[in-house]
Image 1: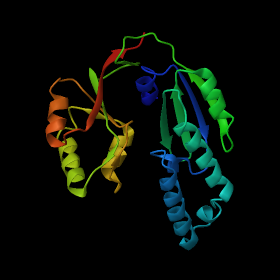
Image 2 (image 1 turned 180 degrees about the horizontal axis):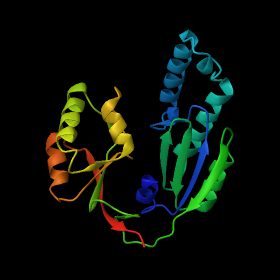
Image 3 (image 1 turned 180 degrees about the vertical axis):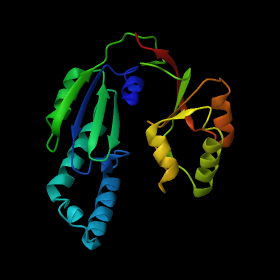
Image 4 (image 1 turned 30 degrees about the horizontal axis):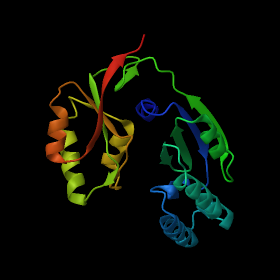
Length: 213
């Protein structure tokens, strides 16, 4: 995964796992967890889709979220938390720290991985890269007008760049939150400046794309 390449520049280990309503942990804010869960419960109480009706949020699910949130907020280890739906990735330098995370209540099917440092810093290895550089975005919410500007910008330059699949979907969907795993591949060094002119502060990190052996 592209985000693994990015975070492994800093953190050597990763544990990924499932957890009910994991995305409510975004921001690691206990009050936000309660607000998000309350909204989700309210929504699910009025919908009629049977598949959603089965996905009830129990008090145990909420307690598990708070347990993990408290643990991470109190951690003295440096770590990075990434969330997507009901799955979480925790990156860290300390193996024992991640083993403790995996033993917390609510963690489902944890999987461990470790970086093999075989490339220069700030590079990504691809089997057959089509472009020379990649820029990742900062996570943030944009206004409707800002999103329209970004849609127009990327549509006008789509023949010269490659957008990550998640960014391509974002341009087509109504959501306005940009995630840190969105990226754009390009060849010319002027691209970060062009993007910044359209939306200042969008670029988080730029890496070089290298061919794999």
